Image 1 (cartoon, rainbow, N blue to C red):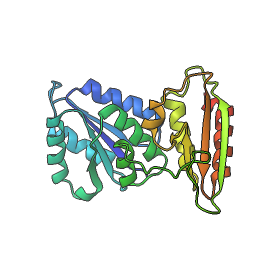
Image 2: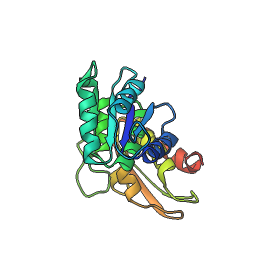
Image 3: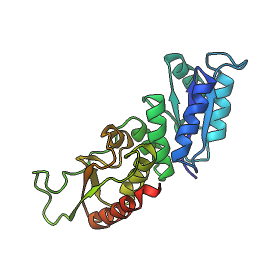
Image 4: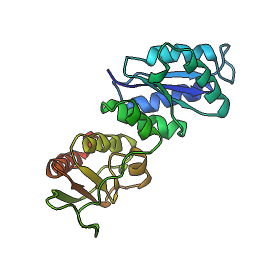
Length: 224
């Protein structure tokens, strides 16, 4: 089971498009659209949101992403009436970026609070990487990799999602170009293009394993 997502928008097309995009990075996550009114118009529907919450709930909880203010109000009303409202969270995040980041976190097996944090870009900051000029704790393990990015379209959403999942799988604080490699939004904000030499650094008990896995991922062009 994984945390599910519900996308609430005033437009059915927007909700469905966000579901399609986020689903590209999270094939195993239930992502349900709740867009538009009951008669297909622009607006939000309490019944659609309530049905989507039920469809997305696998037992691990649901994160809701909304576009405009009244969508939040509709979602809050629906959450108040579900059997277990403590398992539903409305993320304070942009609907597209937040949904994609949340989907990647959910696909990686993160729990409800962590998925919300990913959507809101509140992931924990890693310890200072090796070579950053800040002393690491005595005995801390570190590893570093500098490599050229060969992907034709650079580190766009899909390969970035692969990097985030890989970095999060180890007991190590991993950075790429100095930003947290487990934050999809921060990785995408780097705008890393093909041919760019990029530096990964890790510290922690599994620093070496994390860097080895990332090197294999880069060499495989992130599966593209």
